[in-house]
Amino acid sequence: ILILAGAASLLFLMERPPICTCGRVALWGAVGPAQSQMLADWYSASHVVHGLLFYFALWLVARRWPVERRFTGALLVEAAWEVAENTPLVIDRYREATAALGYTGDSIVNSMSDIAMMAAGFLAARKLPVWASVALVGLLELVPLIVIRDNLTLNLWMLLAPNESVRSWQGGL
Image: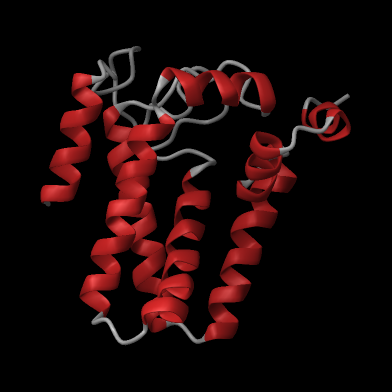
């Protein structure tokens, strides 16, 4: 709770809108101005993948730690990412390098939901067999790729090494 409160407070101090600037809160914000403003959107899947990957990475490097400590570490990393993701530097980078041309950052509600999605992925990885976690990552990457031509893998690729062919494909050209 303290990690979520800290992240929400920092986002508030950064003048992120608590809810969608449209004045409403909804479960789903599809592609468009309400995306990244509502509780969930197509990018929520990538935060579940974060949780699955954090569980695996922390199992590899810190398997002697109690799962509660690994979970707290994953929460800290995800909360720090949500704060960093909403800085002007990262928002501008998303606009220039990824398919998120009109991206204005997340509402605080969306950021808190993204952290909860990561937590759900982490906790799912703890209970699922490895093959099911791998299949879930594949599904959560494949569905957004087909529907909106974007996912966590493409986002990372385009943030780190933008490619005009990928950008054209994402734009439907």
